[in-house]
Image (cartoon, rainbow, N blue to C red):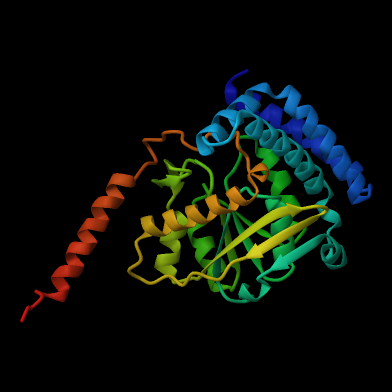
Length: 319
């Protein structure tokens, strides 16, 4: 069996497991489902040694001043958090307005702009799927989705979101660009996760003191359309999910997309520093992707743009 076929087979198996498991979890109280998630997360900490080692390496580079004991405790808590997150995602079809009011708190709701096309930016912090469901109760939401190699898993995620009224756009589809513009024109919040190294045009910007390839598309789209950028972050606080909605960034037509991407990445880093145990430390954030790295090209374009701007302004006189 070749690799694509093996991935497709694995995806079908996982899809069926999640469908069966989800039908059980949805019938349980949320607290009980979370307790199961804690157990699964603890098992993952012990069983997934490769992921544990990678996470330990990554957090050591990000927090060199920490002791090994601090790093180990944080990564163990991360596994617990991811177990909780998985069970909460399976339970999500139960989330309605009344349940959301009991389980979710908000900060900065006044910064949402329902009915106005905006760009939402976040990272894999807290429970990002729960956050999307809660935000979709307050404004139309469209999510750009990075398709997995297993088609059935993409179907599971799309169905989960569609049941909450969330529209999903496949990043790799030929109609993705048109659909994104249409979503903004229709007054939807177009949401991106900006904290992973993916197969998309990217530039290297600082992330925990190291250059990390980061998708350039959201910043370019904001500059092109003038849509305000709203940064939204979720974090677990005790038995509740807390969602912070920061003040919108108003983007000017001459904004440098690379500088804007760096600013947004710095915001995500700040959120991770708030609750480091609630980020996915096993992700290979610093992987090299020469095919998708447009850093040098963007620098050249930026220099050209500055030169043209100076020439238009004319010589500066002195007295």
